[in-house]
Amino acid sequence: MIRLFNTKRGLLALLAFATIWFIILYHFVGSAASIVTSNTFESMAHQLFGALGLSALLDWPVSEYAIYWLVAVYFFPIFSVLACSDQICSDKQRGTLRFITLRSTRLELIAGRYLGQLLIVSILIMLTIAATAILASVRDIALFGESVLIGAKLAFELLIVVMPFIALMSLLNIIVSSARMAIVVATLFFGLGPLIITFIKYQLGREFYLSLIFPGGQINSILSQNGLDGSHYILPLIQTVVLLTGSHLLMKRTAI
Image 1 (tube, rainbow, N blue to C red):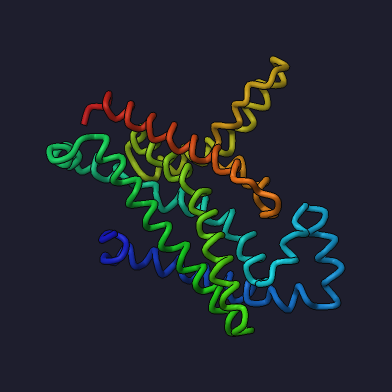
Image 2: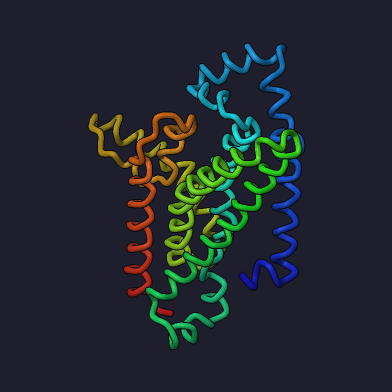
């Protein structure tokens, strides 16, 4: 928290984050109501969203959140990979990791760093949710109540979505020695991993469900936010537990 909110490097990262979201909110989310309700774009929007299975989003009472959700559900996982790439790598490089473990166990170190990163991402999610609610309330103050309810629900959904991505970076921080290398390995994991799995399934002609190891596998099924029964929480929670358990086991066997 101190590194992000009380250092020049952290404040610069926050400024970059705020700039990106200002552009998103001003040019896309802020124009959501006029786009959705416009006679010119209404039929086209229904056709496009219907083809993608997202027509339920057009019925949301706060149209700003429909656009916000489509952006945020892909933005925050990517942001989590980048922002959470240095959980213990810098301590390993400086040699301070052995001194930290004198006052805490390795499990406490992994859990503490993970929860710290999760808290930071949660704060940033809430800030963007609040900004979207303000935009909707400025357009129509009567939407404030609906904005709070929808915003709370979407914040919880986004938190579940990003949890395994942060856990993945925890695991990669044990394996590699620098934050930059962790980002590179994560990029290769998400870029080449599905191709390798597809090749294996094609060669062997069997379904091994290896795609379940990739965080975010449930995103396509939750995009419409329609007819969800809570089962979509199971996969990301299991992935998070497995990745953190793997991080702990590797950490126990790693010389620091």
